[in-house]
Length: 296
Ligand code: NAP
Image (cartoon, rainbow, N blue to C red; front, side, top):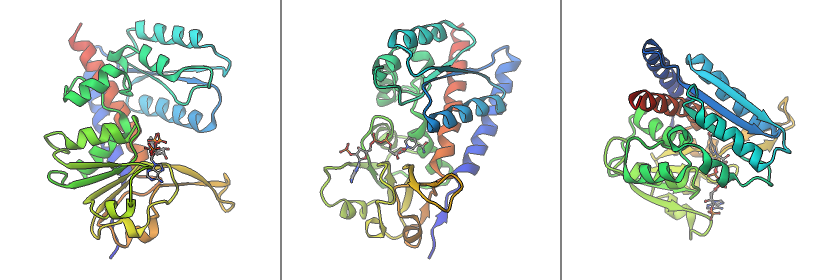
């Protein structure tokens, strides 16, 4: 039997409609949520993401500022841009698109962003708040999006065994924390797997919910799936494909076609977790603007 296809694009559209309503409520109170996105250099994939983020802001009625800097920008120069945005009252959220060129220390930049404007949730203060369950902390957009997919697709996390393959600060670690916390979209028993995990397929087969966040195209096959399990594919890898106009296609970490025959529900790539990431970034920006307005 074929799995239920989870439509991340539709879920994200619903969230973006909610955000648009919240933005008009804030605008009525004289607050226009503003997001600044900083891009250093000319990475083609980053350019696409930055354009999409700017457009999503404008579509929701938010203020958007995109700062594009040349690849030769010094660390000091980039820090000065962050300082300016930190001080700008029209900007409630700041993110620096990663990766930055190798001569710039990404951590130094991310840690310079005012934690109240850190809508990516990478600043240690927000990491700590999320671990402690403080609702004023910003949850990183991708794991936040995964949790919302589960909640909005009525997939029960309470008591479920979730296996997350990947232990990055960006996805795996924060997701494990969010899903194991008490409350809606939480209360799961979470296991994190990584490249040193023994017998990954056997572990994955114990998962009621399997989240793959590895960046290894179609690595996880049907031998790793418990029949009826929910499978969430975070991975996005460009795979050469001469039949596509761009010469590549986007592949997830899951071998989609065989796995969908066994799983209970599955997210596609593209059209699964990807659109949720941008939607949750908007949610975080509205949260930042709301908190800023409350502290005026
Ligand atoms: P990352 O920092 O490279 O982490 C990858 C993780 O996968 C690591 O923990 C690594 O283990 C683990 N891993 C790699 N090979 C493995 C193997 N053979 N067996 C078990 N574990 C293995 O990547 P990331 O930043 O978390 O991103 C993961 C994927 O998600 C990428 O494809 C990225 O493009 C995608 N992504 C998508 C979105 C979106 O919006 N859709 C957002 C963010 C990321 P070790 O720690 O042991 O090396």
